[in-house]
Structure formats: C-alpha cells, structure tokens
Image 1: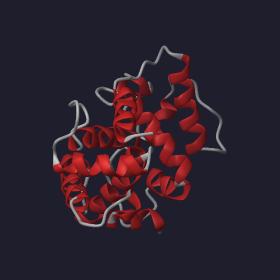
Image 2: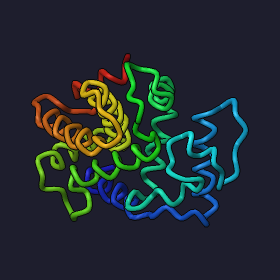
Image 3: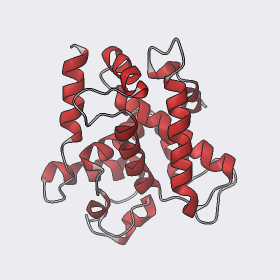
Image 4: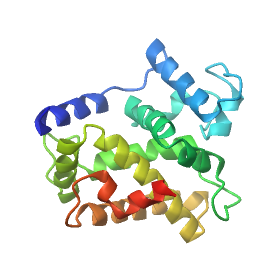
Length: 204
C-alpha cells in the first residue's frame, strides 16, 4: 500500500469521534480495562473504578473531547505491543513520583492529540518538517502513528520524571515532549520509529 493510501487510512481513523453509545466503542473501552487489569473484574461503563486508570470521572466517554476513537486505539495498541512498559506507566512504578501525578488515561488522550497537531495530519498533506518525515515512516510502517504514540508516552513520562513535575505542569511537559520528538524526527538516518533515540525508552 502506498504512502498516500496509508495517509488517507490514518486520516479516516482521525475523523471517528468517540461515541459512548456505539457497541464497538464500548467494547474497545472494555478491552482496554482487561489489558490494564487482567486480574480484576470488568466494571460497568459508568463506575468510580475508571478513575483508577486516570479518567477524570466515572464515565470515560466524557474525556474524549477532541481525542476521538484513535486515542483509545492508541492506548490499546500500547498495552498489547509493550505490556511491561504500559503497566509501568499505568502504575507509575518508575522513578520518584510526584504526589500529584498526571492521570494516565487522560494523559494518553492528550498525547494522541499533540501528535496529530505536531504531524500536521488534519490538513490534506502534511507540510511541517515533522509531518513530512512522518510520511516517510508511514510508507515503511502502516502502524507508524501508533508506534510513535508509544514512544511519545514513554518520552513524556521520562521528561515528567526528569523535571520533577506535578500535575499543574503537565502542559509544559507535553510541550517539551513535542519539541524533543520534532528534534528526533529531523535527525538523519531515521527510516522507522525504531530509529528514534527515544525508542530506546521502550526497550528497558
């Protein structure tokens, strides 16, 4: 499949809003819970238990403002492809943590949104340097967006720890994550997401 077709597929994914009344969207949320907490009972779709995953209230569907279904797909992909890293971030087991931590699930939605903007994906064809470089990655790897998402989440957490940040500084940490990713995408000899220096964070 060519680069153009892959870009169109990705842009189609970006256009799907999260709709809590659709069964397949409900199923995706349940799948995320089962991946996150394989030993726990599945809660109903409105339950205080969702807050433990870092949703803001008992109903996760209200947190998707601007994120769309792709941000849930990104979280599911991360949990499936890099289960150990996903669990570390979910349970905040690495490093000295702030008393007021970022909420895991909501952070994930923000990361998806940040990547869409950074890569200029909502215009017909990206013109930003990062967007153009990303298209090269996409031509090699249909899942380049989801793979880059996993790197971005790890990088955000590493920056969070390095800065000793707490919740009020989340947006600053997200900005510096974006800056670092833009820098890495601009490096020479990057032909896949695995070539990015920050990909090493997923290998620990």
